Length: 489
Figure 1: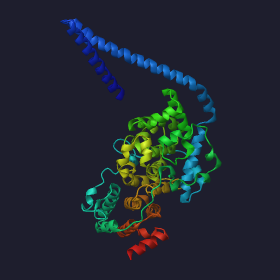
Figure 2 (figure 1 turned 120 degrees about the horizontal axis):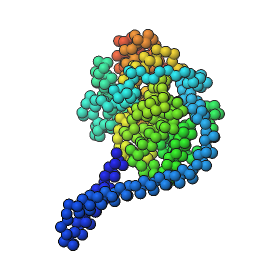
Figure 3 (figure 1 turned 135 degrees about the vertical axis):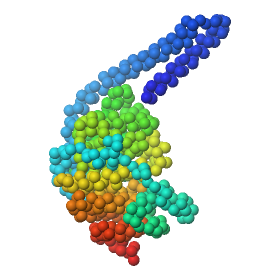
Figure 4 (figure 1 turned 180 degrees about the horizontal axis):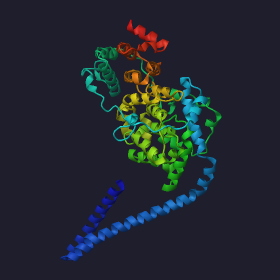
């Protein structure tokens, strides 16, 4: 569409210039043009100039592409034998296994589970009206009107958008539990310790663990163009297991555009959001043949910097339709984790990507999936078969935000976890396992950063869930139990 509009703009410019020159010339020689003169000089001549220019430009670009491809042919031929497609797939399985080790699972057992036979694609309950996974949606209908209009910071400044959205989530939860909103006032007045913010280059989510704990094969260093593509396109801290397909895509992009690495770096950094989205979408073509859902999920997690342009559901749909990939329950759970576990890039990182305008937008609305609606169907699906070891841990950890994400992450963590437990309890009859809801709560609420707001919300949530037959504090770890009891006193 953009190319078509540019071509029309060029035609308008050619017509304007041609008409101006011809009309001025006719006036100078005092010529009264006939209909043939008008058709020849005001219609045929501009069209001829326009078409000739487009053809010459196309021939020039095609010639440049052929020269670039010929120059890079030896490099492509040498690189193909050294990086077989099976190696990155194996490494992705190891990386996914390492991500679960902090949750008490053994790496070897998880790797074997990830190699099991595939299951059917996502059930219809997990898809929205457009066919995209519900987990790729956002909290678009969050009602900020539930908050008192006079709330402010220190009685002066209005609430930051992130804090207002977090409190609104709590308000929605309390309303569903038929609890008074007065507890929000206590949450607002509590002095929660500030969560230190990390620089973008230092981000390394705790759930990923240390890559040094993985087998030696995951430490293999690829002979690729440094980390240019990772630095520009993916979140800092992304594991090098994706460098092989990224390198293949980058090499092809260089060949198509006739650029060297330095020129490509400059072009990508100055590229608008839609241009970056186009290249990220093209990257799926390189990753999808691996037939590893985790590869696309990690890519989707890294593309959160331009999520307003690329919907992760688009990436999933393309991978599923074009490469025949299937996204079983564990992949859907991994998507929830990928959406929430990666910390947000700071303003400097966005500026390097040419996306400075996104730094002013609300990060919660941009990166948090609409997980509460997808969770009931996902839980029902997972409990209907033999779940992978740690599969529920993917769900619970993904919906429990880390302290590096936003300043009020503990508050939002409790709000999201509360919605999860509430929804899970409604499915208890279908699940046939009340302990599943307890396990869900234990993972989602076992955060070491639960502040005063979270403690107050835990008590209110516990009162509401007791009526449904589950005492939430029974599954909260001992330190959190002590803190909650102290807050109650």
